[in-house]
Image (cartoon, rainbow, N blue to C red; front, side):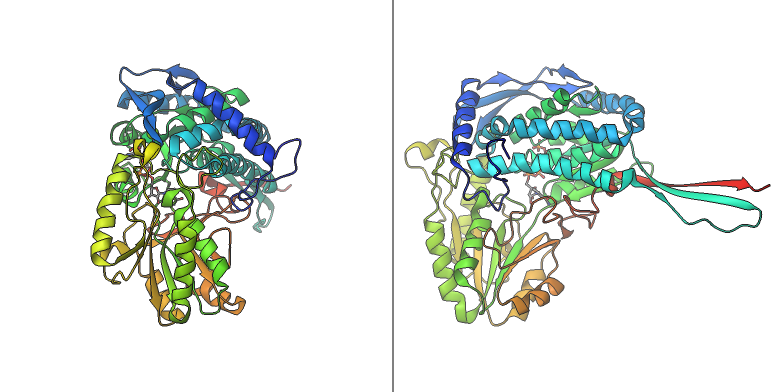
Length: 529
Ligand code: NAP
Ligand code: MG
């Protein structure tokens, strides 16, 4: 990852990083802290754009601390950004793909170069621990490079087809994939780098121009990404960064008639609302939706219980349960239920909770006041309906009182018809139940509207059964790094089935870049003399 060390940072290797990584993170963190409270503009047509109204971005670690001041963009800013992207499209789409790839590789290299700066901002802004923050940034660069590699491996998606026979004529047929036009990217708070940079990277490599709007809670990290695109030398208007509320500027982007395609990553309800509204356009336009999850882990009586508990706790409580891939349902074969539960509770109680920029801390705050309130409401509901074995309380001792800290929570004895078994809470809460056999576990696992990720722990002979039956876009067997979390581009393509995703093709995989292009078949017929 760096010149001095061959260490490759991924979500699987982040548990044991070299010492230099910590030192460099710490120095970047001090630098970030020295510039807190700065104002950041939107970037439209290559220029900083300010709005009349602003909003403060505060850290969930300590709500007294203002990280930056951001622009509350308006519907007009959205339309201007779309117009700038439309104006830039002819030149960008006709730039030879090799040049686009070269520029995007330069952007990826700048993201790598600035990994500590962006990672420190991320830890402060999201409340994500330092290794996960650095992982999110490294993933972003890898997602962009993966799109570049795919473009190259497919030779720009120009494919010669068969020659249809016609007496006295020679016919040449070619299939070409071409970009659509202006592509909008709307991203969620939890992976503000990867889920902004991944989709916009693919869209740009494919030859589209983009407008991107991050979550209001996390506008800083995407601004730093926009600067990487600018500094890499992307042409003005090819990338446009806007900020402000989803309900106003976000909606204006969805409604803009000149938008040719959208990638939305976020909650099921918001995504489905966007999907329906977007369908009111004059014709059918592509929309890639990456939505929520309610991801199960199934533990067989043949499982290695230490591995299972390690993977489950990492996936249930990594980023405080606020991953779309978080493990929120655990089904355990009755003979090993108690042993597994004991291990899960023991490991949960060992999590170090506090300021996630600190190297000793793995578990930080939840993102905002609404998540903090939801946690308290859900905890009360779960305590009444089942048993809270550990957690269930907000944490307010000492410095924790200034942020949105919630204890990691394990719930048992929750009747299977209780509504929260099927509801994505998106908080550090996971529910565990015994099952009589694996078939029962599979039936309950699949009986939800979601189908994002899933994990299985058991004998290797059981793996094929699990893969075949589970309704999920990402599936893992016997993985200690995470039961349901921790995908990496080029290794585990990431996307959801059913209510978790619309395209049926996964990001960071071989079929993703094509979603950003439309096919043109080109036939030329020459009369033979
Ligand atoms: P969210 O509330 O749905 O917001 C996502 C984005 O949509 C934000 O940028 C938001 O802006 C914007 N938005 C809201 N209303 C809009 C509208 N009417 N028109 C256009 N944009 C609008 O999600 P979140 O709380 O940030 O993220 C958590 C959710 O994302 C979870 O459900 C999680 O499972 C899902 N997620 C899915 C994946 C995946 O790959 N499948 C990955 C990560 C997260 P504001 O912030 O300004 O409201
Ligand atoms: Mg904030």
